[in-house]
Structures are given as structure tokens and as C-alpha cells.
Image (cartoon, rainbow, N blue to C red; front, side, top):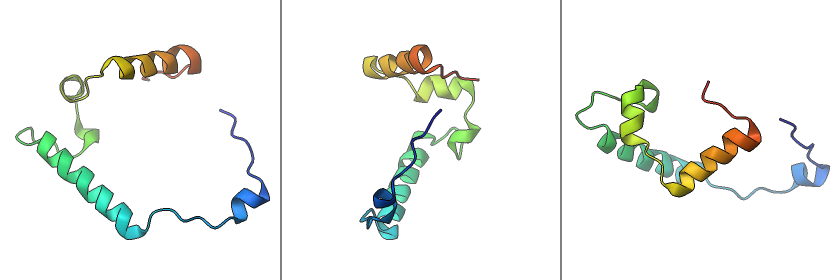
Length: 80
């Protein structure tokens, strides 16, 4: 994958992104969602999911299937 070089102006600009507190809040909210999702399944992180869990918890809607199809067919992305 080619990534274009940044220009000096892009590197030197002030970035007013999220604060650490805002990022921490988003992370904590995501962890809460994950705990609820895996309640009773003895899974504590996404990396511990088996293919059975992925099929159960990661079902794609039509838009998601279209994005996946494009990624495979046009970008050459694979699951392996």
C-alpha cells in the first residue's frame, strides 16, 4: 500500500484532536459494551474469540457485506 508523503504544512499544523480524558472515556465505554456482549461466554477480549463467536457476534448487515466485498475484490484484502 502506498501512502503519500505529508507536506511540511500538514506536519506543522496545530492538531486539536481529542484530549486524553476524551479518549479514555471512549475506551471505557467500548470496554463496557464488550463486557456486556461477552457476559456468560468466558471471553475477556476480542482476540479470544473463536470462529463460532465471530459468527455469533459479528454479523454483517447489507452495507457491511458490500464493504467487505469491495475490500476483497478491489483492494485484495484477505482474511489470512
